Amino acid sequence: MNKTQIQIISNTVGVMTHQAQNTINLLDEGGTVPFIARYRKEATGSLDEVQILDIKELWTKLKDAD
Image 1: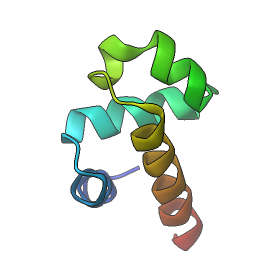
Image 2 (image 1 turned 30 degrees about the vertical axis):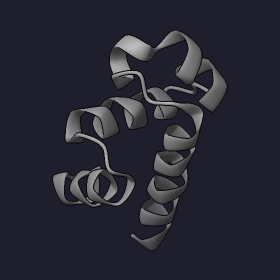
Image 3 (image 1 turned 180 degrees about the vertical axis):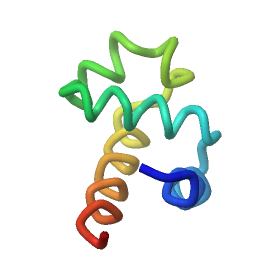
Image 4 (image 1 turned 90 degrees about the vertical axis):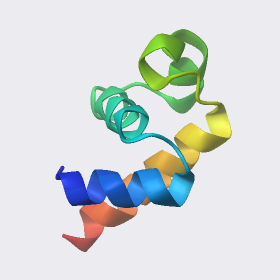
C-alpha cells in the first residue's frame, strides 16, 4: 500500500488519511467490517460500517489495478 492509494481512498470516502490507513491495516489483518465498526472505534476514529465498507471496496479495486 502506498501513500497515493491512501490519499485517493481518504479523499473519495471523505475520511482522514490515518483513518483510512488504520482501517486498511485492520482489514488486512483479517478484521471484518462489522467487527471493526463495533470493536475498533479507537483505531478508525469511529467510522461506521458504511464508511469502512467503502474503504474496503475501494482498497480492493486499487489493489486489483496494480
